[in-house]
Image (cartoon, rainbow, N blue to C red; front, top):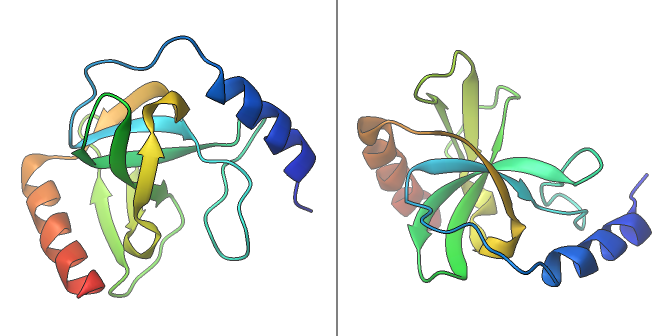
Length: 130
């Protein structure tokens, strides 16, 4: 069951935060308040509606392009599987869920994707959206 009322209340709090994560970089993975979304869009989980998100491109101190991640094994042209640096678990980038995020949604740094994997992910992402 979707928790839109709870998410709406939390979203108001996130929107009124006084500080943003500073100095985020491409290739980093952050726990991000993704929220309670519609239909097949990826939801966050837990009290803060968190989901790990891979930063693809930073546009400003306020906005970045990101990919939600999952630990559920998935295959196909809209998924990219990798192991985050210094982590022992497989992550799956959901290429079809790419979107802009405000940095107010960022919570804690979780890890990062290796340079070679990131280069391959970007190639696969270009193919997926063209």
